[in-house]
Image 1: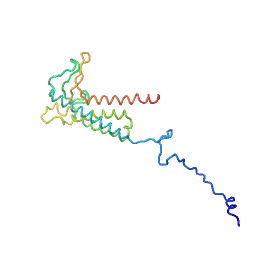
Image 2: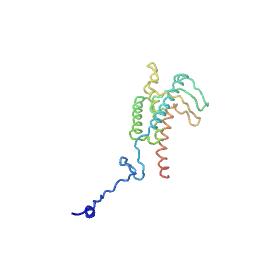
Image 3: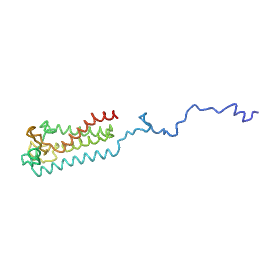
Length: 217
């Protein structure tokens, strides 16, 4: 009979060739960036939802309240002009049945449909494709959404009743007047137009400037 100690020496316990996972690495976490130790989160932060909603709602409300106040004070187009800095900057009511700064007159219905499509595109881009992970894109598209909302309200005819003149129906209310002797009179505009232009400007900055700065860094 062979002693147990001798048997153990003759038949050593098989050694596993599998290397155990490091204790500091969690198998439940999968990183999409192999150059970094921390995993990348694909979720849109909650504060981006709040920032987008706040800017879009406040901008739209500011546009609608300002238009309502000016048109109640000065009346429909054809009334007096209130000069802030004569003869360059003033307040004058106008109704635009076209697009931004008077382009495309007479196509209010078409622009209303395009506005709805643009608003849907903004939401899909921000939150489905997660563009809202970028702060600058969130702010820029919130401004665009505010401008879309303010002008869409007017294009749907929600600011007037059926007694309004045909030339004013479903038109966008404008009230900011800017003119210069050498440049002429700029088409009247409103806060929604300003928000659209600012949002578009931020988008252009993001497209052309940000990649260069990130590459340089």
